[in-house]
Image (tube, helix red, strand yellow):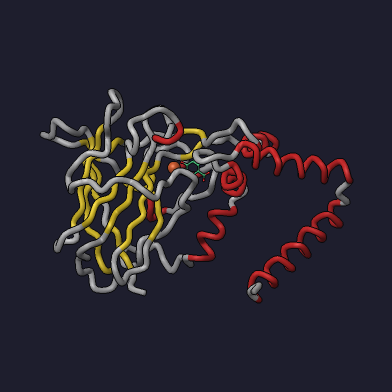
Length: 264
Ligand code: DHB
Ligand code: FE
């Protein structure tokens, strides 16, 4: 049976689309171009290319619903960690890895980075045992593992905290890169005179029993695109500093970042 919520939302959507057409005196040819735009996005989409999501992201819709869903209370150090959009490249089945391991396989270039921190309760500051961090980022060529022929699950992994709530692993210092712009999302960007770049970021989903999971990203402070992310995901409290790392042959940079979760 249809829920009252979906009836109400769809009726409102239709109302707004009609208002849009009236306000702009949309013609038959213009409407048909819009239909073709949607169909093209559908034809391009497959397991590793979610063009519908990309289109939504460049118009700021995923960021907006993220904001609506996880109302940002505050970006203070005492607040729960801010959220950011999931984006189209998360995979549900990332492998579990040992704490302190690297997620980097078979990549000759790139700045290796040691990341560590604590997952804690935002109110009590107590470390959270059994918290899971699911992490993913791109290779130095700007592509996620499923977008090309990399080692499967390269640059992704899941880590589980022990009693001390601590996590640590090696990854790469991310770089900025363009979102896929050879389809409808790219056309839309061009007609709006916008670039497709995303600032360098690392994705995280942090979850723990009895706590609200957070989907988020951390952004490299040195990035020139922080102020004009093509998908509007940057928040001040998610901007981090990668520091030079001394005495570790496995990494040139290090990053310390704690995650603060709220109970249900
Ligand atoms: C999008 C998000 C990402 O994190 C990314 O790496 C590429 C694209 C997006 O929102 O479309
Ligand atoms: Fe991303």
